[in-house]
Amino acid sequence: MADDFKNEIPEEELPEGIIELTDEDGVTSQFEYLTTIDHNGELYVVLMLLDDEETDDEEGEVLILKIEKDPETDEDIYVSVDDEEVSQAVFDKFLAMMDEEEE
Figure 1 (cartoon, rainbow, N blue to C red):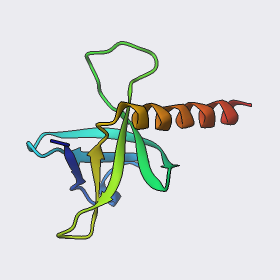
Figure 2 (cartoon, rainbow, N blue to C red):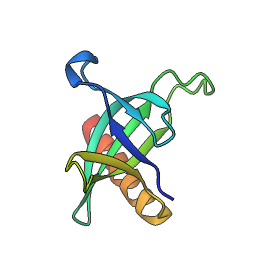
Figure 3 (spheres, rainbow, N blue to C red):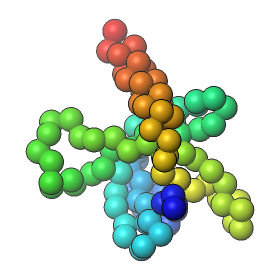
Figure 4 (cartoon, rainbow, N blue to C red):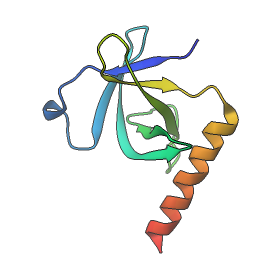
């Protein structure tokens, strides 16, 4: 089953570019918003987990989630991407965009 994440915190209470998501198990984590990418007519958000003590990498791992509408509330929800090909394609677009910004 796909994980659904909802942004439960009013945006004005968090620093700019930081979002806090709560998963379906009630676990809350903070992420840095990197970008939104359109892939085949669907939107995906690219986030980086903040305060990830398990990795000492200079570059953190990114999380790619599909943006969908909650049918009950019509609010945006972020859904995990189960299709590895789609996830890789979105990640490749993200890398290409980062390369363009460096030039």
